[in-house]
Picture 1 (cartoon, rainbow, N blue to C red):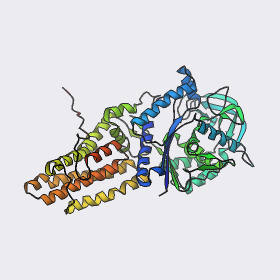
Picture 2: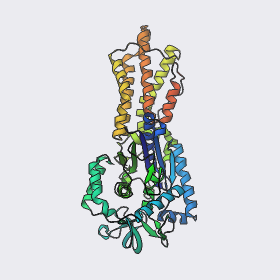
Picture 3: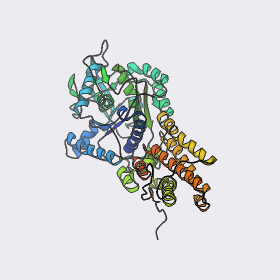
Picture 4: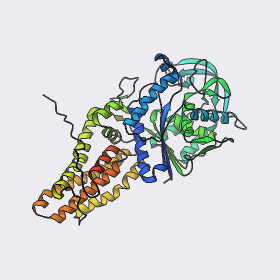
Length: 507
């Protein structure tokens, strides 16, 4: 394991309010950040999120709102920060692409690539072709059908203008070799296959990295051509290094969070895979920035409503705060990462949340916690008993407690399999609930088997404390509540954690 852990989310485009897709990525990143802080220490983990604030869509949205672009982005950024606070997102840094530190780094990157010897990686040329405003993407004629964007299927326009280009094509062979030599670089495996297939079946065209100011004024000016601004995607990707380092006078990148001893994870949605798995590594390589030994781009799936991707443009987006307010923050966090293996698409519905709530949280975890508190209160006056001799079933549970400290590590840190990590935790909860039903502690009381009862109750307390530690990254408030109720020597019984939601129709 690396000594340091640096995790990033995409920087979210602020032309509209945040939705469930944004919260899904940030909750996943928060879980990994909390998880790694437990293992490496808080000082060795850095969690970056932020906002992408330049480009044509922002300028258009600002015009429609009768605001300047800066006024518009300032208003929307507040919504993102408020959402992350409400969802208990423990980020260490929030970067905005309108900040001076980012603008300075983007400018430096452009200068380094433009002045590269013997052949500059940025050059000027005329662009003639098709452009999608919503995607802010140029498309070659060969990929166009019926004058529609290949990605979003909305109308595109034909343009002709002088721009600056980044020599992506020079690095295609290198990138194929790098991805093949580093199987963990793009995950999950189907996304790695997707990127490699694209690279092997298509010839990379050089990336247009500028827009004329006469067409788009809202962006970072090119230092060598003030009449152009930087293409939003080239600008945005640089945030991952502008937030944690700088370039020295010789163009060498210096950072305490980007080195051989750091594990770097970029969490993204699958719709922006190509930008991150093609543009981004080539940009780093062209800048002579050494890759961390352990670097991963993980592209997760989408949340669907029926057969459609959830999005504001389709009118089927669900507000994360509405769900968190209705079901609780930890319930929302738990559902998103438990219901679907990370990397696959999932279908979202309130019915699915309620099912998980009543089954996993109320019946399983909540029931185990409350019945255990009640037994400690009833049989031992709130004092937690000492450990005792366990029967064979109890010994198996004790072994599962010890295994719990390593099993979620494998699921989360190696495979990003949040669902599997939670399943392992819930397996222990199920074992403990079964232990109660089969042991029948009320009979131990009747038979005055005090020693057996003490060992039984203490094992349940040990299970619950281990579960609290294991679920902390996923459900921090719930873990805190459990720990407050189960002290070192005595309990402090509170209300049930997850009262069942009544799903019966009312008369």
